Image 1 (spheres, rainbow, N blue to C red):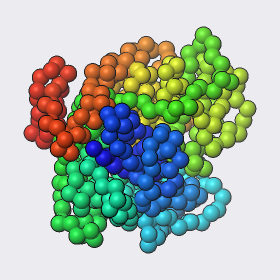
Image 2: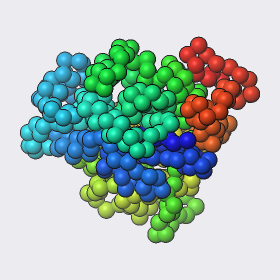
Image 3: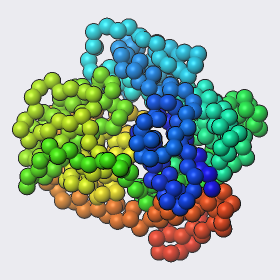
Image 4: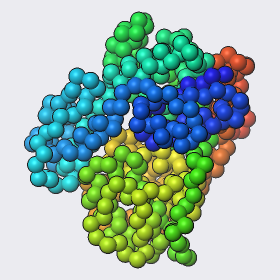
Length: 453
């Protein structure tokens, strides 16, 4: 079987697909991974064959949006932004003809990091959802996949659920398309939100209309967290649950320079997108200062950001570190609420302090707090003191660790990546489908095709 994987060029979107691709290779299948050019090195570092496709809009957008100043109509952080205010922000930022790259909107003096961060957040959350995900970038990747299929025709497409070029190409080729959840919930809402712009791309490719977005999840939707995590959210059609596997590169190892003692180990990291934005620098300062006042050994992955003060002796700054390995020896994980970070922490039973900011991070933070596996410090009120208080709370209450380990046990009870590959084979018609069963071995299917445990 030939399996084509597609993803946006961001680590949090690529990494969930890597264990699936590795399992397919172990089973003797052919694998190709299609994404824009900026993802080439990352994909190949996992030993996967790379196929260039689509437009590199995300990197261009992030470089531009990191320079945004605060639009005059932007509400104060304590005031929720309404639809008219969001529309005003979109007009000030401006849209390009290609895939919605923002225009510079007045590079003046920084007008307060919190409101500036809010400007970036609104831009990424609102405009780019429709412009980037279902716009010209998706159509371009679909056409690149169709061209490649003339010489390397896949039997199945597996996409991360925010990449839609693979879905469009599969529809043209008449192939089944599975999606893997890279966000913390409401994937069905994303499909509905993008139904209209995706229909425009369907028409451009000669496909019949799909006004309700029903085709987006017509086959298999993969969740890498237990049903408990999504207990309060509507199930995406055709959902099955599988065991989160934290991906590693062949040469991944903890830096030899890191030393630990008998104190709790606290790891802080904020993904790959947030550190490239200038608004992140003040957050780094607050985290570094706050951890300096906690009785712990702390490792902070700062990316390209720079702390503006010398860290305390118990705080070690690194540019990057293999997150799954660092989590294996951590007692607490401070993160931005990205779904990749949340899943990797829960897979190892590590409690969290979440500082949410972008996209689905607020939903993830809220859900982690509801499950009792994390406490939340809103980005808008992040200070060294608030960060210290949150860390002391989680480290001092063993209930956080117990509840995180309970979620870990639920994840360990789910089918493996190898079983997922078997199910993908069945989807492609290579073998009979495996019955859907819950953790007690009972065959139960809900009305929408999702497993209910």
